[in-house]
Length: 161
Image (cartoon, rainbow, N blue to C red; front, side, top):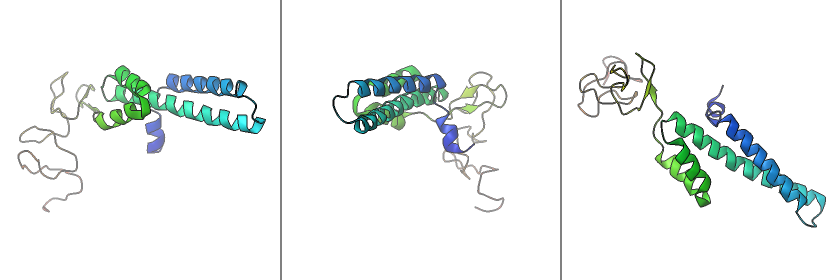
């Protein structure tokens, strides 16, 4: 499964179904009360309306699912994305969203990436400096906080600095 398909799968299935239903209702209503334009024009406008409503609903569903997997207040963010005009709710969400949660290797609970120890069992989480225990990125060769060399850093070989 490629990365885009995996990321789009974050949207809740019920939200996608609801957005498809609302899009169909909106497009059907536009087709029925569309006035006197010729049939191909009404069909074109109805299809464009269906696509617009479906994409909008899908994005709200995506924000809901993504905020949930990141441990954020998913109901509030979905409501903000849906109700704030001019797509400013979506923009605010994508600018302010938190990083993905990381699993604890000892108990399986999820924790924020800025934590060094599991809040449930107290075990050390992966991605922490062995000296100062502050969070480090997986690609770092040295801790940015204390300068300790991190053994096993990605992209580095032993003996090179």
